[in-house]
Length: 217
Image 1 (cartoon, rainbow, N blue to C red):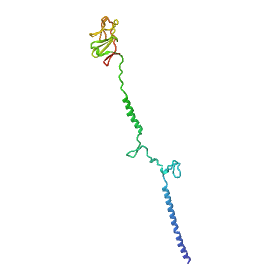
Image 2 (image 1 turned 135 degrees about the vertical axis):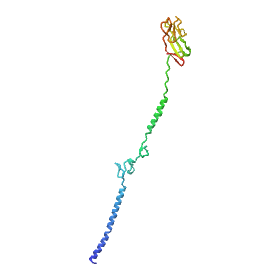
Image 3 (image 1 turned 180 degrees about the vertical axis):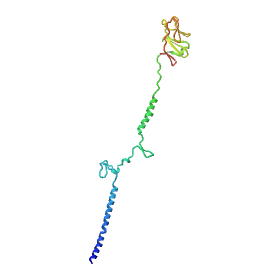
Image 4 (image 1 turned 90 degrees about the horizontal axis):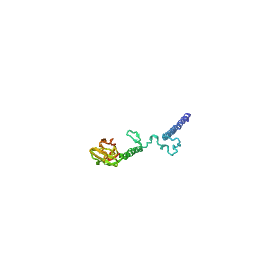
């Protein structure tokens, strides 16, 4: 063989030997890129606890992927509004407490309050008011009081002791209160002297008609 043919053969054989090299590099490069893409795809973007180990597991045993993010945790007792916003309902304890206060304690206190009864005046019961005639009167010797009724429903009371010498009145007639000792007479309306020798009118007394009885205050 001539030197030229030998070089041509070597160049052809050498070219054949070099053809597979670029192919193997391409395969290796493709494998490397595929492995890098898989590694990137396997990486997690979730937050890793500060004290987690290489596997992303926290000391309390919760793995990196199991930890919920702060934005994904629903608030307890939240109610969804039509617009998508969440609002928390008022605490049930306060509502119940308000109901007990307004519906139970306050109303119960008002129902339990009883109206105060008017205190009856204290004094000495002289007798029934029906015993005193209109235009006349009645003498209560034990109490030394004379009660008159000048007009219907109008009651007056005076001392039954005569202002002359201290005798007790004996009768109420003709619109006067009469003393049996010396004939002194007094008006049933105001106890003024009508007939002497009494020097002054009869002192007035305070009475009140309660439950149909004349009460000396």
